[in-house]
Image (cartoon, one colour):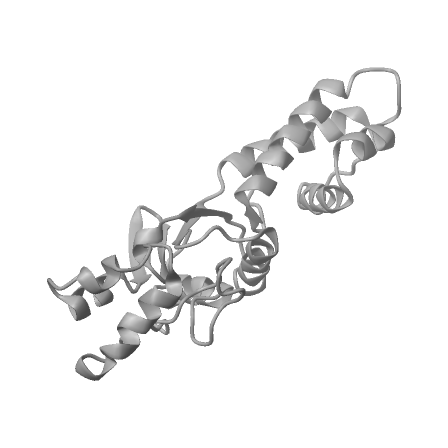
Length: 218
């Protein structure tokens, strides 16, 4: 059976840990099944487990059925595919949650969303899944624009996103900033310095669109 709900890597790990603790405590006699579920699972996790139980035609009303459900749920969680999103900054929890929501809206199966900071991509994102990598960053584009004359960037900190944008804007007349293969453009994404995602920058919608446009099955 498959998991229908996407989640962040942290949520995935927390849920596996909660299921492990619940499974180990099921046969203790200090409380009933409902109390054990409330002890180890959040309200959202209980809802997810209940939905999974319905697909198994079981109910969370006795120890034996809960044990069977938890074991199958654990296996399904461990078999989930991972979507790696490499971006140039450390995303906030709210941003990761928004990405997860997008995947839940547009995909009919769950995936684990993992993020990795890679400042060298400058802006945009690199999406990795199913052993394939799709580069929607502006790293290569900026390198083409600058050619061998990278001293312009060396005048600024590599994490100064405003400086990168200024360099690209100053040279925009010699090369188009947007590509046909992506909706992304040379605009700085959210960071501590800019305070928000700039217009036309990489967003959680782009990550889902990339997956859908490449017509991949996780």
